Image (tube, rainbow, N blue to C red):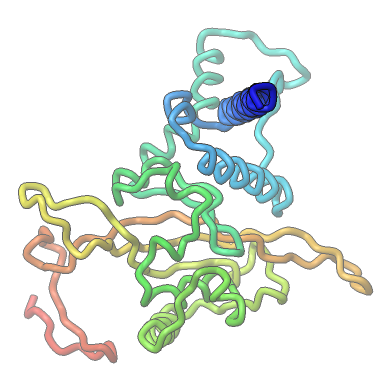
Amino acid sequence: EEEEDASRNLRKEKSRNAARSRRGKENFEFFELAKMLPLPGAITSQLDKASIIRLTISYLHMRHFASQGDPPWSPLREGENNCNKGKCAQTSHSLVTDIFEQHLGAHLLQSLDGFVFVVSQEGRFLYISETVSIYLGLSQVELTGSSVFDYIHPADHVEMAERLGIRPHLRAEAGCQTCHESASSSASTSSLAGTPEPAPSSPCSPVSELSERGFVIRMKSTLTKRGLHVKSSGYKVIHVTGRIRCRPALVPGSSRPLHRPMGLVALAHTLPPSMLNEVRMESHMFVFRVNMDLQVTYCENR
């Protein structure tokens, strides 16, 4: 019996050591994978395994989105420059220009009055700029790879799905809640927008007006009003302007390739609060009020 107990304890110890070794190897692989993500080391070192997988999948989808779309987005490879015939003097001015162009995207994002995002055809954030934290209080890491429908008002789900071109029978799979309120809201806003909506199976052209998008939705916000320390409704009104990005697709029997939608590339602006006493009225502005049918019910004398 003592020999059996000793043998059993030895097997248990070997099993624990093997499990400990597997966990160590797994943690090392996740650590190496996190270092390859295009994020600061201070962020990647704090990510859990699920977040690393989510961000990695989103990054790979974004690479496909960039390279397969029309036109393809391809950054300058190392060693490439704009010099004619490879002859140019590396002056201090050209060095400064090169350094600036390497960080041009960051400079543009900081200068924009809003945030940029890319949503796939399935309704997931492939990319969102870190400036979203300024306007909504949400983090770039949290949103990337998540469903856009988890962060917009339920009454705006159908509106967002229609703008992305998600078919009705796939809306539930994408996380879109279909209710009478959202349907009526979508119908009213869609009729006002005046933007034609191509079906997902129909061709679209990157230079066509059919690919342009402009609409208003409500997105979650964790920001609080200064001095009050009380959250408002938890949502902010966002004006979204963008374009559907397409990819060429060969169709049998067709002489030229069609363009299939891949997702939405957009710029989002937060609109001011609805209370007029919080909006500064300039001399060239006036106030008017309309009902739900857009009939003017009041207008200032000026």
